Image (cartoon, rainbow, N blue to C red; front, side, top):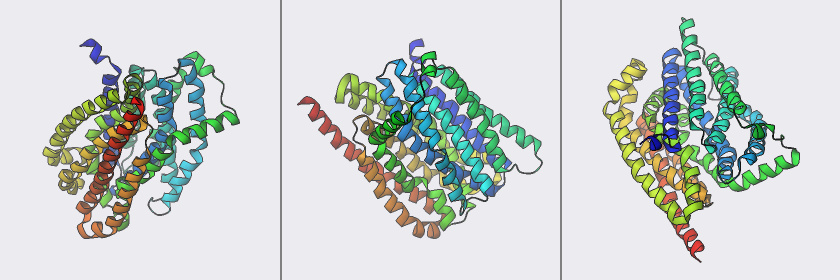
Length: 420
């Protein structure tokens, strides 16, 4: 029993409970301490953060983690430093993205700059988490996540307490970035001495690393772009084709159903690494057994969580968000359908990443994006918030079905190649 509780998988799940609880609590705090319009803006900046984070994970940290699994510890330091420098080179792009979006959807450049600062701090902390995941130092990861997510919550509460009027969103975002930066610095300081002593990369090694990462991840990166087009950009579509304040109601429903993120994010961190281990040790058969076993557990846990959240949706929304968010209650049963479908996409995508057959992820999301952008201008004005939820659901279901079928075909091809 003790060995099971101390395993990296259990600690990964426990850590994600901590991260998801901290994120959810921060969402509740923002909903309470800013204006309704600023909460809509917060939802849009969060979508941008997740987009940048998805590209960052696909291009930098996921290839780093998968490669480091098979490497000796002394190779982690140079690899990590190459990733950190590549990440820093992308910071102007992050700021540019937020400023470009602010011209139409955000209230001011101050909010855009503050949100980009928080995004940079978040990504630094996320990079350090990933290298600690590879080292299986899960207890230390949890301590650092407690500092980052708990710290932003404490600073937010202090700002709320000090203000008689709603807190400015830009102030809240700047304050929230501080504990993430501190957590990243402590994580780096805790690395083994050989890793910290590794030389920072020169221009040539940086170019080779950038090229290698791109070769390995380009289809996944393209996929992430179209994944957001398929269903993640629905809040922006609501702001464009509906009413901007509807975004707040949509986000409240989504935040409640993100209780499923406890499983989703834990699997996003753990599945590709563990699937890679099974594939290296047991081949296609071991990978397939692992994914099917995981699917059974994922479906059972996800269904139980959704039943609780939807069944108690009305009192939960009233208790957590207040009487400003009553429209969110009617969205919960419909939004739960899409949330459940996203869980199964994690399995096929993790498997495709391991067998290096990721181009179908891209094509599945291209089709989903075309459908989503075709439906939104018609469905959202006609059916309002409920129509927006079903635009997202269809944008999830189409890529999920497409990629599952493609992955099963690719898995059979890889198995045939291994046997011949």
